[in-house]
Image (cartoon, rainbow, N blue to C red):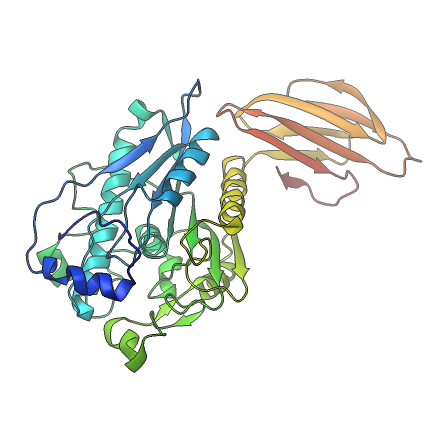
Length: 377
């Protein structure tokens, strides 16, 4: 590749490209690096992992950018192993070179995840709780990592040509041969070149995007649509942003959320001076809540409507606590209670909370008159 780090400066993106384009005429061997943030004073043996990928138009950026550091520290404080990665960047001014650059970034993200999963014992990772997120080019790479296959490449990027020049997605960066499945992703103003990508694997998606973004289309269009002379169409394929991804995910029945910043452009979590604003903390919290629901999914309250008893069906629960309103608990065991409901009670609710073996807390409240038999916590 050309480089793995080029810290963002005050110069505009186009000027940075012109300043550094001379570095893209010869490739060199590069060490791929990552920063790993571990929770302190944490005895949990199987922690969730979040891997974050910085943005910068595949040309600038670094794993140590302010937003990546803040996000990693935040998620490590919640008990995650948080990782920020660098990847190969830089391209010549041609559509083919830009396609190759995006593909190499995907290979490098795949290599980083393989490394982490291969070292799950060292970092106390739960391989069933893998999360990825990114911003802009980092989000495009995130989406490609999860949904792209070697048979679904950008137009003109044939498998035969890419395999000869770069190898397949999973054949670069290191020699670890491990499979992994990403549980959910955070898409911060990213896009995919083909909505069919989302049909490849069922992964939950939370997306954020400004609806006035002219760098990456909010819905459908060409990147850098604000550049005069239709240069976006010259150098890029049409892409599908958060709005289109949201519709497709809903159609496929994937768990999804879309948060739109009305009137906002690209990178809406920064102000005009590049400082992080309140949107950054909104995004941070929404991602944490979305991922947390993924961690606690699969735990169920099973309601017995013939006999007024309720139980949690799971082998992942460490502790369970019950609370009811409008009735009394007649008997209880670790995961089951029998209840007598007051016929004249204006409100009847049952709340179950507890701790999973992963250390995650859960809580769910149901109304016993609900016709649903299974209610996810």
